[in-house]
Structure formats: structure tokens, C-alpha cells
Amino acid sequence: MVGRRARPWALLSMSLACNGCELLAPLADQSSPLPEPDASDDRSVDTPDTNDVSLPDVADAGDVSQEDSAIPESAPPADRREVGPPPDAGRGCLSTKPFPSTPVRDTFDGTLGNWIDPKGAFFIQNGVLRANSAAALYWSTPFGPNQEAYARFVDWDPGIYRLSVILKKQDPAVDCSNIVAYYSHYFGGAGKSLQAEYCWLSSQNGGDIIDFDLQKGQQFGVRSFADGRVELYVDGTCIYGEKFPIGDGAAPPWLSQGGYIGVETVPVRDGPVNVKPAWDDFGGGDFDPGP
Picture 1 (cartoon, rainbow, N blue to C red):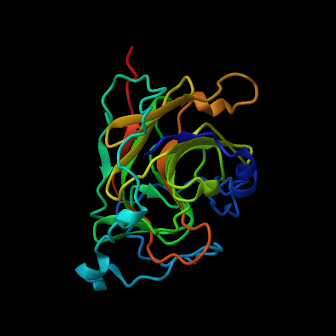
Picture 2 (picture 1 turned 45 degrees about the horizontal axis):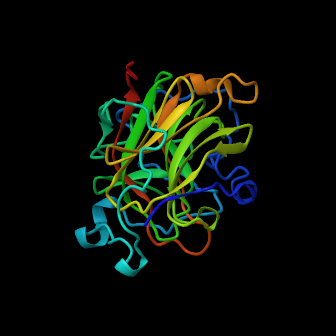
Picture 3 (picture 1 turned 60 degrees about the horizontal axis):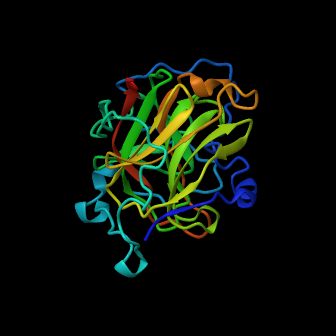
């Protein structure tokens, strides 16, 4: 059975001091403007990865057999909990709009020309998006204060630390200053769980950890409202909602504003990683919150 658990703040300060800030390497010149998206960019240029946590090399996508690229099965039944929303699913959910209400932006059948990849860590392989290291990838167009983002979480290693959807990112070239909604296997020893946080001044701030055994292939998404509310969704069902502070002097001013959307991964907590995280059918954008 799944349920919710209070947030382990002590572990948070140790494990996410800036681990939650998307682990993006600061650029040498952060004042330089972001490159314009180039539809012809096939991201075929190898980019050195200086992150301490890297994933094993894979063959060129053209050389990967169907058998090699098949999505591994989920954990064996003995390691699985009951699949489905927690008993108090919907707690804090206020939106009456169907989710998602925005279009799919990328099915990853082409190139990454419409994305901003600050670390050059992402690539497309056999119709899914994969990542080589801890990094984030952003859709090239920012959206307004009421926005949503979602993707199918297709594949991950059993040692995955965090697999995320990002909203309201202020500057793709700079750490932190965003909302991150994620699925984790090992956050603070909490096991399989969902959570939403905002990163501000190099620290993570958020609410409850929601026990949830997300299955490979399920759609995970989040809505962020101009009034500071966020709602987490799995396969179109709202699992949990909470409200971040707005206008109290301690909260970031951009919580009521817009920003970039995207995906992020922090691949491991410890030990080897044998499966590179993968997403598919990414979507999102502006939505009408309604009455």
C-alpha cells in the first residue's frame, strides 16, 4: 500500500544542498545570450562530460540492435508495491481542467534542435530521449505563469536518485531558480516517491514526500499556477497538490512568473548505473487555469 510521508528535512540539507539545483555546470560566461534553436542541429558533436557521475557509454544509435535497446522490465514482483494512487490521492488538487491540456512538443523521432542542452548530455536513441549524466534539458521557448509539463518516464536504472520534470526555469545557463517535480527511488531512504520542490538561493524547498511506485512507461506531469500552487499528475490523475509561498518576502519572486520547461536527471545515489534514464512524449506549455 502506498501513502504519504513527512519530509526528512535533515537529510534534505545533506543530500540536496545543491544536488537539486539540476547539477548544471556553470558556464564560463553566463552573460552570453543563449543560442538560437537550430532545427538542423543533430547534436552529433561529442561534448566532454566533466560530471563526477557518468553513465556507461552506448554504441551509436545506428548500431544498437532492437534487442539491446529494448526497455528493461520493471523490478520483480517481490520488490513492487500495489500500483495506483495513494489512499489520499487528490489531496490538495484544485484544478478542474483535464490533464494534460497542452500539446506534445517532442516524440524524439528527430533531432534536439528545439532544445537547450547546456551540458550536451542528452541524445536521442531509438525514439526516446536519454541522458549521459546528471543534467537538465529545456524546451527553447519559455511559457507564462500558468504552465504545465509532462513526459512518459520510459526507463531508468534501479539505482536512480531522481528523474524530473522542470517548470519555471529562469535561466538555463544558471543553477537553481526553478520548480522541480520528480520521481525518486532513494531520496533520504524514503523509497519510491514523488515530490515537488522549488530551488532558490542554492537550496531546495518543498512539501511532503508522496509514496508512489511509478511504473516504467507511465506519464508523470506537473502544473504550476501563478498563485504558487503546484499539482502532480500520473497518467492524467492528480495525485497531490500544495501551495508554495508567494509574496512573503522569503519566496522567490519568479514563482508567480513564467519560465522554461524541461526534464532533468540525477542518475545515481551510489553504486554503478547500467541503464541510462529515458523519457518520451514530452509536452507542456501555457494552460488556462479557468475559474
